[in-house]
Image (cartoon, rainbow, N blue to C red; front, side):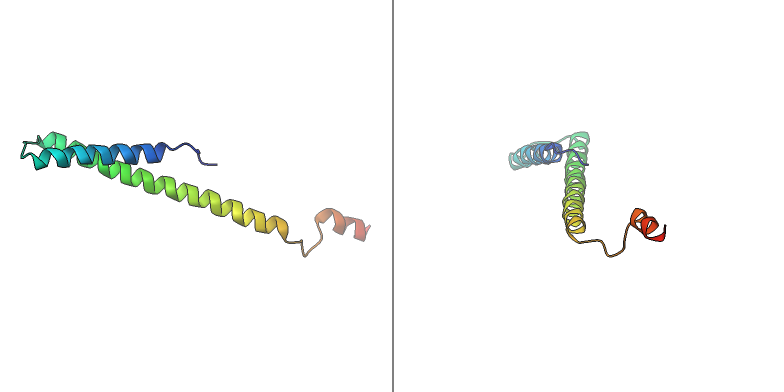
Length: 89
């Protein structure tokens, strides 16, 4: 069962905040160190991939719950092993 915390959302929001700060600096025609720019790009990529992974896990969890709900609501077509052994004996 996936963790229900909003960790993926927090990482995504952090990445967006850093992006906003970087863009604000670019608007001022300031110099951005290549190492800082590379680090910011890595954070953005990690935030996007982390968000996609969180969404994937969440959708799997939700679909598993829905499929499990439908499986429980349909009656069994074949008798269980215990019922079959009672009929034979």
